[in-house]
Length: 610
Image (cartoon, rainbow, N blue to C red; front, side):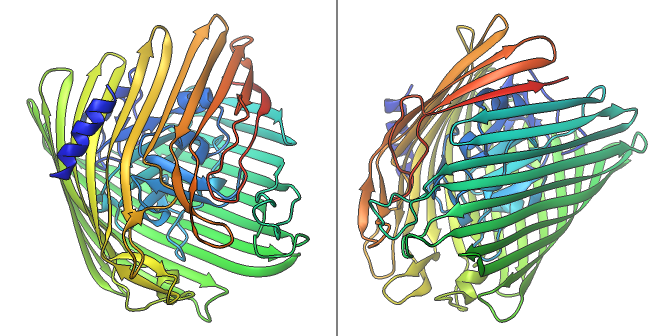
């Protein structure tokens, strides 16, 4: 089996319930995304990592893509600077094959199936959980490469404010403030931020003379709020809201150099929940949520296009602890997607009814996870998926895992009815097999996973006929290595991904997938020195195929290595100052052919914390 060969190759090359519990050891942190039930990170069978406020603070990253590029299996491509259109590649899949949730709510664009994560800045984010692989049996359409779940900030401890101001290169500035905490049985948190940058020209005019050579700036205003109350020992309720508004200037390679393009995009995720324990062993949770993505593009001040998506969802989840070692879950969900797009003459919508079941067990050295999901789409019918995972503890520190799962992606409205749309499209389907080994001891956690994903009826755009079609050949095989822990006083995170992503255009030979490298890696290390906390990171990627920005001919983008350096000084218990030297060695590289990336830049912050 190819997956065994991949594992051998990798080994040769590298040695919300009410509260999510925290731990000093990441391996003991509690996560929920991997099984939709609370479990220790070290017990999760799918390859899962978590980024907490500490990792976010250490990175001094501005937005979600910049934070996630440290994680194994994750790549992104950005058409310019902060706020520009961003493509996400989890385990070599396309953007529409990765599901992004904000507090459990979908905010994907129903037209293209992707989420505009470039507008998710980090001041309102408490933690991020990343689950790799086919988990459609837990979350439905799009969870082929994996799931990224963003949790916004929650109040904790005595109510207190937070605030930060930042200024730096390229006319960049940021102001953020928040207030949150606990009062009796009530928890609350409210935060807001404003980010501005003059940026740089998105497109290199040497490669696309028609592009406007001026700077392309970005503005972002974000807000998050949460409120929860424990009504009794068995009942609780709450609500959350996350909203972000981005305005980005961008370039086109096919216009006059004087043309000005602007995109305004509003993302919002709102949810209300009620949780109860009718019996000691039975936990029930009802959630109502809505995610929206409203985007308007302007050309020379006039509206060029409009696309508004609304995802309404309702779920009823039940978990029964048959014994302390056996948990059964059953869920019912309803999803309604609506799209109003200037390219269509009428509003489009679809309804999805879902039945989901799961089983998680721990029997001495053995662990088991089984999930099944059946979805009924109003426009194309049923889609059934499953996940079966097994873990075996060789010792207290060494663990083996194996899993197999299926996933699917429903055709988007653009696939069906947009330019070149094909109403006869079938859903994309995928099957993944994985083998993994984990070592977790004290603060250390190392995990190596080999995977093999095969696609059936992959959806692609046929350049020969200008139509969207299903094709047979698409696959990704590879291995991911991740480490988190402490070495010689440094808090260290490292990842290495080796993969072979293959795609086929209709009537053509299978080729390496564009904008996906065969290898990419990251290493970060931070440590305290008195009142200082200093650190840095190296982000590297091998060469990647791409299409020429003007001719669309196949080209090769060079690999790169970017170094970022950070320092933070704690003046007293509350006041701190921080500095970041981004791209310290001024590496010249591209994520997308023809598009520029940021050069060296210095950023300084001051702030107040509880």
